[in-house]
Image (tube, helix red, strand yellow):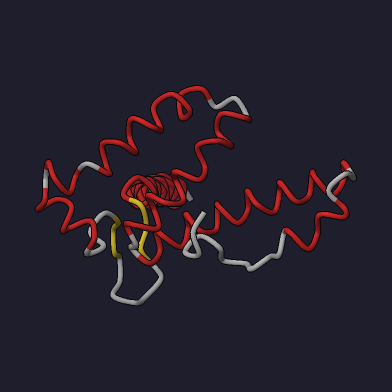
Length: 150
């Protein structure tokens, strides 16, 4: 893992005296996984394609260990395809390097999202707006009916 994915600088070598303790090993592995997850989030929020690929590659062993078979099986295929973009599709690679693999809702820094997350957010927002409108329409028609009967 390179320095780009090391968000928290932890000297693991200085902690080797505790490495025989099972509790320490559990929490050390948890901290490594959280570190990888934060690196992936940072890659998406910053629009950093290289950090995305690097953190995804670092996650692959954990996906295998924790029995996520589809990610473990297709993750290396995805990674190989994305790493070959520079030669096979240089224009797409240039756009991804420029940060255009994420959706930017605003021009503020660190607020970009993965396309899938943006799609769910947008769909859920529109869905909840429709539900509010339906509720209001039912309420207004209910009030109108009962007001006329009074």
